[in-house]
Image 1 (cartoon, one colour):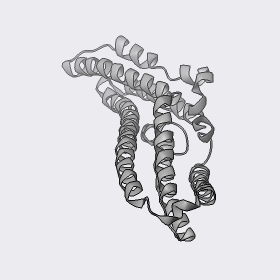
Image 2 (cartoon, helix red, strand yellow):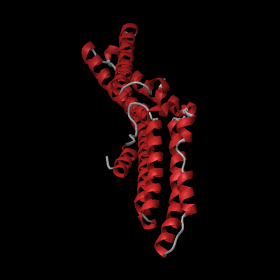
Image 3 (cartoon, rainbow, N blue to C red):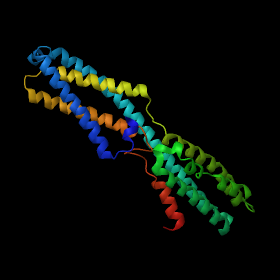
Length: 262
């Protein structure tokens, strides 16, 4: 289901998750009230309320931990794309110590790389079949320029040395980006855990006794909306480089604009 949601706009993802889970909760409530009318007497509410509170705390801690970890993964992916793009931009600007001719070559190599990344970006969910756009994201021209540099002073030697080290970090960030693009962050056992915990919360809310039908439906709808909001966050953050909520290639476009004067 998560892969199916990747290509949908944000409003569609929200509609499917929120409407689907809310409909399930209301339907569950209708079944419970119809087949177990004695629940409306509320004689069991003291015990049910205590158990619901315990389950709610466990659910909040479990899902909260998962969402926090996913958000950390999302921000890490964003920071790595920034570092990848702006490190190359800094190399192009710093190459001025080698003279205008070499600086133009460095700028062309960086522009070619960043434009290849921008062409690849809309196809993130299917990068395993986009070998051409993956292969275009190569750092070999920049490595070649650094290796062939004819240095004559300490500033030029320092630039070549720092550029070689920086390209190693950029290469690691590139491989991390390509890997994240085709991989889900959350493993399937955690999906089972989230689904089970969400279902238990809704079931206990349905078993809580209330004489007022509409008040009961209103309360369980509110709980379902809260659970659906958490589930939606988990789904949206599961693929940091694809889907409705994803890291944008703004940093690469910014470098292209700066170097091309656009």
